[in-house]
Length: 640
Image (cartoon, rainbow, N blue to C red):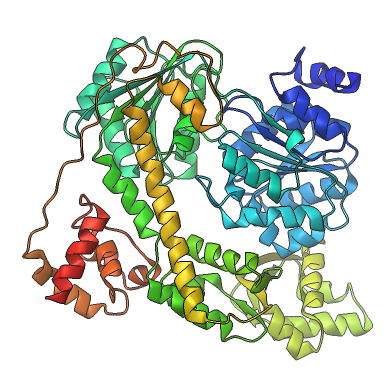
C-alpha cells in the first residue's frame, strides 16, 4: 500500500488504518487493476472508491440503485470537504446543470448515478469524452441472473464501462455466493486474484429465532421488546399495511414506534429516518425500503416479523445491527404461513406462455431496426415490465437482438424569455431552423410539445440536431426542457430458426427463475429450523467456513424448534360460480388459468391493471391460499 493512500486515509477520513480487505482492494485499484470487493454490510465498501477518487486523476463514476445511500454518502463527503454529487430525478434543472458543469470542469471528483441514468440520452452524450478513472458498481450482485436481486440494467453496465473507456472497474457487494462472485468477475473482466472477499461472520451478532403463529406473533414481538434493554430497533415486515398495523400495535402498547415504507410521502419517510438516526431507543417498523444506506452504528436489534425473502436479504438486513462492534440481537419470528405471500410475489412475475409467444412473434415481425415503448409492449403481451426487460436482455445475450441507445420520443419546453429574444440569438439558417422548430411544436397554455423524430422529418434535418438545439437553449436558460416517452432501439441480428421453440425456451427460463426464487425461501426456513449453529450455516452459504460454532445463536444454546408447516386453506366450491361473471367480462385480462389465479391471489398484471380489476370485490379473495393451490383449483374448475 502506497504512503499516499495511507496519508489520504488519515487526512480525509481520519482513520489510522484500513479495515480488513480495504487496503487490498484500494491497492489493486491504484495499481490499475479492475477489482471485486465482497464485504459484509457495514464492512466499509464505500471507502474502496472514495479514497481512490482523491488519488486518481479523472472522474470516479459510482453506479448505485440506492438514492438514500447516495444522499447520505455525499453529505458525509461534503462535510469532509470532498467534492461529490449525484444525478437523480429529484434534482432541479439548475442543480443538474451545476453538477454537469462540475464534471466537465474536473472540479467534481465523485459522481453518483443510478443504473437507469445510462438510458438518458443527454447524460450519455454529456459524459462522452470525460476521463473516467474509476467506474464503481455498488450492489454488483445484481449483474447475476442467479443472484437474489437480478436487474437487467446491470447486465449492460460492463458494456458502458468499456464504451466510455473506464480505466478500471470496482464491483462491490455484501451478498455474493461463490457462484455469483464468479458471474461478477466474468462480467467485468476481473481477474480472480483481484477479487477480495472478507469474512462474513460477525461475532457480536446473536442470531435468534422463535417459531410462532400468525395469531401469537404480536405478543411474541412485544414480549421480546419489553424483556430487552431499549435500543435503536428495526422490525422488518413484508407488506406496507403490515408496517402500519405493527407500528400501531406497538404504539398502543406504549412503545415509541413508527412505520416506514415506500407508500409514504418522501417528507414523511425523511422525518421517520431523521428521528431514528437521532434516537437511542426508537423503533422503526419497515419494509426493506428502510435501511439501504443507513449509516447508524448503534442499532441494537433487528427483528424479522415476517420471513426474509432469501438468505441474501437476511444477511443484508441483520448486517445493519451492531456496526459499533457491541453485542446486538437479530431475532426472527418464524411463521411458515408467511411463505404464501412471498411465493405469490414470485408467481405473479411469471407470464403466460401465450404472452411470451406473442412477444417473440411481435419482436421478430418488425423491421431489422426498430424502436418500441417497453410500456406498450408490456401491456400488449401482459408481461410485467421487469420480466419483459429480462426477456429482451436474454435475446440480446443470445445474439438475436442488439440494443441501441434509448431515446425520448416526446419533449416539452417552455420559453423562459420571449420567443423573439430567443430568435434574436441566431441569424441566417440557424434562426430559420429554430423558428421552424418552434412552429412544428404543439403549443399548450404554458408548455410546447415536440416529437423530435417528426420535427426532424418536417425540417429535413437529423433528429440529433433538434435535441442538441433544445439542450443548448436549456443550458442557456432560454427554455426549460423536459424529456419523456422513452423508446428503446433494437437491431435484429438474426431470426430464430423455430420461433415456437424459442418461446418455449424463454417460458421455461421464466419457470426456472420462479423455481430458483421459491428455493431461496425454503433455504430461509431450513436455516431457521437448524438444530446446529446458524452462523456457521449462513457463513457456509457465502463461501466462508467458521473455525467453530458461534456459541450464541438459537441452535448453539439449545433452543432450536422445528418449523411448523403452514396452515391449510380450503377453497369453497361455490367461489367458481361467483368468479365466472368477472372472467367472462374481462376475457382479455383473464383468458388463462394463470391469469385467473393471479387475480384471485390479488396479483396484478399489465392487462388486469388496464381493466381495473383491482377494484373488483373478488380481487385477492384467495390471497391467503398458496398460488399453486389456486392455479390447480382454477384449472380443474374451469374444465367443468
